[in-house]
Amino acid sequence: MDSDGPVAMLRRMVQIDSVTGSEDELSEYLVTRMRALGFAARRDVAGNAIGEIGDPDGPVIMLLGHLDTVPGGLPVFERGGALHGRGVVDAKGPLAALLWAAARAGARCPARLVMGRRSIVARGPAPARRASPGRGDHRRAERGVRYRHRIQGDHPPGA
Image 1: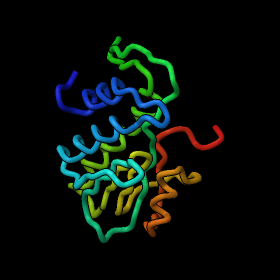
Image 2: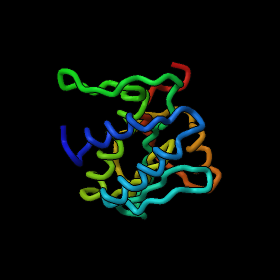
Image 3: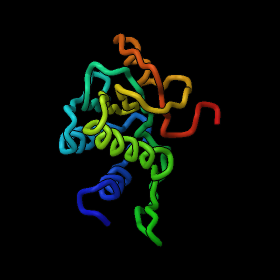
């Protein structure tokens, strides 16, 4: 496995217990990792990890994901090149992929990328998938952040 790359980050994310309502440790970890990837990162009053990178004047593209998992510990291990553990699929894996994609895109396109506990926001052109807002998304909407497109990194609501 990579020592500092996306797989190592996902492994650490999965090792951190983040049952619904107990996501603070993982949120703090993501702030640290986002800073290392070049994001200006912080936590907001709701506990969201917020990171920004790229062009602050481009159109907003929101990339959604979440940190919380259902209760029940599972061992974290790799077998046959696949990582196993609570949250790998729903939805720490997709969130880690979105974060790394945002970090790489932020340096190459006119985009502002914002990573949050429940969402990532990107400014700039990109494909999108529409879905209803999550709680972190509502908090951003209350603060006046508007987005043109959205990509959701977990199952759509009602699925």
